[in-house]
Length: 194
Image 1 (cartoon, helix red, strand yellow):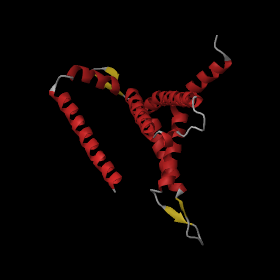
Image 2: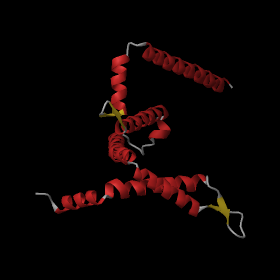
Image 3: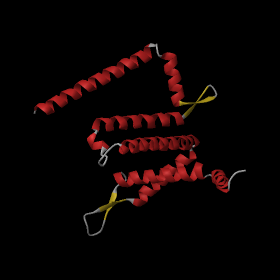
Image 4: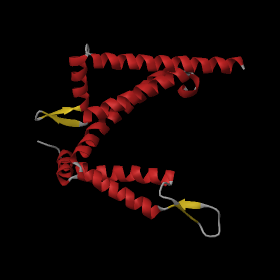
């Protein structure tokens, strides 16, 4: 028998809280915050001062329309509902890792300042993790079967790993990484020599 809280969550799911209301609020809030911060839609001056404030009416209207369009598209809502819990799981895993590191540190842990290379490595790993989570949450219809973009990409790589396209991509990546490494090391030597 389901608990009363379980029944209430089922009721909220049937009501559309997770498919309509929460995605709408999330997209509206994020879009509104970005528009307020960037002031893309302009700003108005406060009378008698040189200060200006963002156009809240325009920002709110654009955010409202964008959020409604997102909620109207079932695929985007599905991708949000599948990816955000996994991103939170990634956040909890990284927080747990930092807590475990903090056990062995005597003073306050300033990981970003004291270990810049490790910090950059973790940022890159988290960025790749977020991209993989979203690629796994976006689905395509191939031959009447729903397949995530990540699954399709992995299958394509496995099927074509010895082909000319995949070989060309690998060579291109190696060349780009080599050029990036060579140009960055020259800039570092110039700074040290000056």
